[in-house]
Image (cartoon, rainbow, N blue to C red; front, side):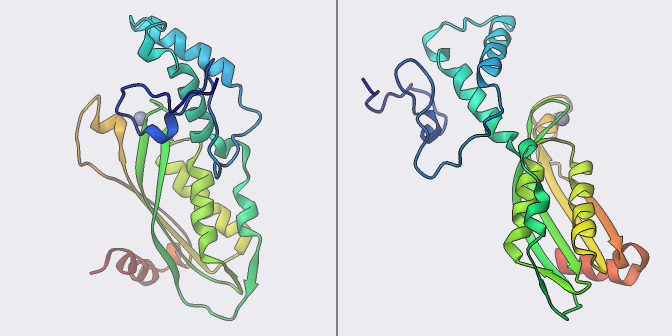
Length: 222
Ligand SMILES: [Zn+2]
């Protein structure tokens, strides 16, 4: 029998918590399929181990479905391991436009590889085309793929810039990422509100201070 809206009394966002008898999830219509090559069972076993190790009872009612839920969450959070961001940079248009193209405030969430805690923020990507122009939504797609991996913000920033250079051969690329890291706000040094900003400049944005100032002004205003 299908669970008729079976829900636990938890406060997590219920949409993701739909379960059916015997565990496992009912994917919603519209859900992108999870990567096939993620071993969900193995994650479930590991989560049960962690719960037991911290002194919890994995068989307690409220925790029974947690391992399956966490397994699915990790499959989703790390799906970028199984996707190639380059495919989003290969559909380009030939244009003579050679001024700055900037997409600001591309929101993302990623997972810090040191603590497996989320970091959340925004990416700003600017470039000066060298004859090839991208559809604007493609930049957001690249951020989405690269962020859905165990990450450090510095590498994420550089990866995006380098992909742009390799696939578009632009005159310049500027990637600025700002994010709040749960591993700094929730634990350890506990500094809520702290923001980490990283940038990767390539081409003219690296070699010309005036170009770099221009793009930073466009990103941050005056
Ligand atoms: Zn961390």
